[in-house]
Length: 201
Image (cartoon, rainbow, N blue to C red):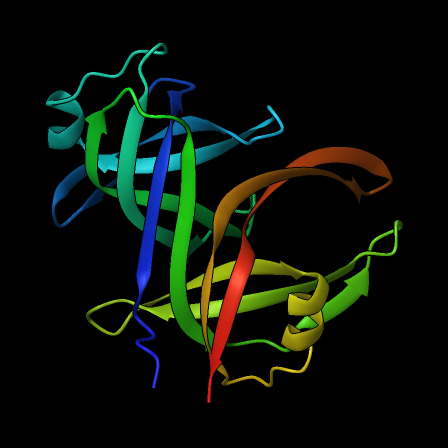
C-alpha cells in the first residue's frame, strides 16, 4: 500500500515580489511571496510560497537572491468570490540562499478523488487531468490538480476514483483565457505536471 501522505516539493528560484500577509495560523503570521523558477526552455513558473514571519525575518529576501525552498504543496478553497476557487501554494518548511541552479521537483502520493478527464490537445497530444487528495496529519487533505501526458495520460484515464497513486513531476503555473459574461479574462492555473506515476494495486 502507498503512503498517501507523501507531499514534498523542492524549488530553487528568484523571489519575484515582496511577501504579503496571508493569514494567522497556530504557528503565527503567515506571508506569501511569488518565486520565479525557470524551466529549461527559459520560461518561468511563478509559484506562490507561504512562509511564517519568523522564517522570513531570519532570511530577508531580495530580487537578485537565489532561494531554495523545501516544503509541501497545499490547497484551500477560496469562498470570497474573488480569484480562483482552489488556491494552490507551497508551504515552506525550510528556506536558504543558494548558488545552485533552478529546481522544481514535486513528489506526491494520494488518492484519485474525481473521475479523470482525458482529452487531446489541438496538436493531437494526449493529456489527462487528475485531482489527487493527499492526506495531512490531523485528518485534513490537500486537493492537488495534476496533469499527465502521452502514455501516462492513457493509463490515468482508466484510474477509478479511490485509486492510490504516487506522482513525480513539477509544480507549474499556466496562463489561460476564460470568457466571463462575454469578456475574455486572463487567469492562472497551478498544477503538478507529472513525469512518472505509479498506482496501487
